[in-house]
Length: 137
Image (cartoon, rainbow, N blue to C red; front, side, top):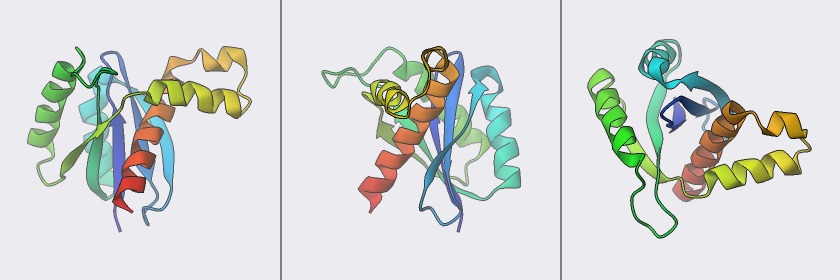
């Protein structure tokens, strides 16, 4: 089987999570400088089979679109042009950052490490992917 790759897009950096080849477990993969994101994804797809991308859709708590959604849509258009053979699905990413911080607290990660925004983005991507996988089942 192929992997599912989740993207928590940010203007500066983007969290990436991926499933195992059997699509059982979601794991944080890395955080990428957003300027290098498309290159990273192309390289990754050349090394690993990817069945689909799941992209976090930034929404406000009231259900309205966030300001960042315009940036994410622009990126998704670029991704579709660059890798048209791989379908893209959206996932509501409301509260993923809050859940990521709570996960870090629950796991005993120290205060200094919790300030690492790249780690928060990676964990957020993992939460997006886990949510998508749970809905699929």
